[in-house]
Length: 232
Image (tube, rainbow, N blue to C red):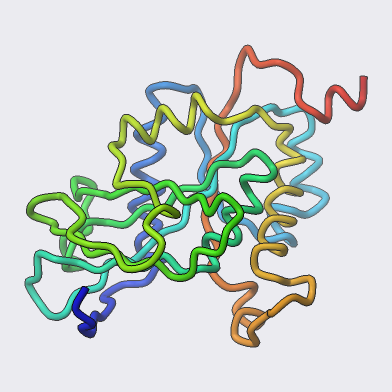
């Protein structure tokens, strides 16, 4: 891949607005309740929030928003980077039964960031190995990956929205909603090395580096969760 300078034109948070809305719309026709949320331990993870979630059984996924980068205006080829930190944290989520995806809006201008914009979806899975950074170039006209720099086996995709929905709903275990908050807190801390391992100074002051958004998806007709078995 030629080493050319690519620049961003919006941040991950801006991308999240479209990606979260797209996922809710994609899943709402298949399940009765889909709730996107961002996690702060002192807000979504505090004792009041947990008390309101007692007895709720759900599925959950973590989704990292990625921002497209371009060389200049009016480009049809974008560059997308998956940082090593994402794979480390994704591995921690997988160990706890939570699938991890990434999404990137297929646009080259913020003006094109509409509800009809194409979104590209990926599965992140390091399988416990070191991945490093992975960068892909995507042709927005052909809707295809031109080339990949880094460990391509750590990123699967792009996958279609039907494939994404099926993986979320069929391959995702039911969890106690209170346990979900514990899983998120523990996975992010361990993935971002907040227990004293290799923590970069910038990652600490930016609240632990990159953070995904999450979905709570109502589960019906499921077997007991681990928490229910333990309490029986």
